[in-house]
Image (cartoon, rainbow, N blue to C red; front, side, top):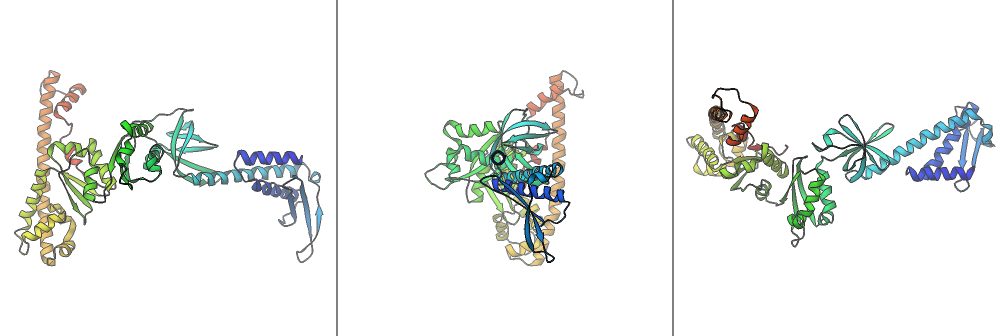
Length: 457
């Protein structure tokens, strides 16, 4: 019996990854509970138990105490004397303690693996969430941590990141993710040895799961090409990562300590003419040619949005004509003010304040500090910029409304030609799609509305 008990405890410790000593202590506590149950005792110090770690022999005793609470004698209690009901109590206590030990072991194991990639098997789907078997634990992947468009069925193998491990009472809640930016980071470490060895560092990462991701990399060894190493021979390394994330597009960006260079790299494949930084506003204005505008913005503003997250700067995109017009309006507004010189206007441009909206936003206090003007002059400049900004905004809205009206007329005319109906006829879906293809856009204001992106997404 004793040898059999030791074998069972060894098996439990091995299969459930529980410390063997914990199981011995649990069994001893269970036998003490059985003795207290048999003798109907509430005193936690009245009984004791010890199990020999080598032979498996269990000794139970009762402490005989004097009036002062000192132990004066030990009375050995044969296990057979305890009976059936105390044995059932011991069984329940053992089961409870073993479960607690297993939960603690799981908590400790997965807490160490947090942030690592694990491979599991899909067990089932509970609502929009996936339940995944990882080793001997069931983990949970909520809908928000899944890559949009991916579908898994029970039995599928899946790689994911251990995002979080939480103590949920009697259970350990293990949360997995495939949508986290760190999942991409760990995939690069797995596929690119230079990243795992820290020869290449991933400086920043911005991701929209299932669509696009930008990764900024830098090499600590001048002989190692960071971008080339991440892409691999004929794109072999990056292709493995892209395949793992269901075809998500991944852009490799060269990191640079200069914010201007980094921003230029981040908005690629668009070619940037100039980058103007405004430190006070935390904003970068990039100037691109007209033929590069849509490329810089990206589909639904995705390219500039990810670039903003990657660099930590709010980014505005302007064409050279728009940039020149903004400076012109700024000069026309501020130059007539007494105390404002051409040198001050040039300094404003150098500080990245290139429009009346910037001067209005920055406020008089910073103008006093940066330009060295009097408070009254600074307040006058801000007031003038605010008034002109409202006028510019009204004019801009009017131009957009006119452009929308013209586009609507063009779309109706195109619909009439493609659909064979009158210009005022109700458009069908096929003709509307054809019209969008010819015009290049379905909403005239959509391109303008996506030229700015905040670094916080």
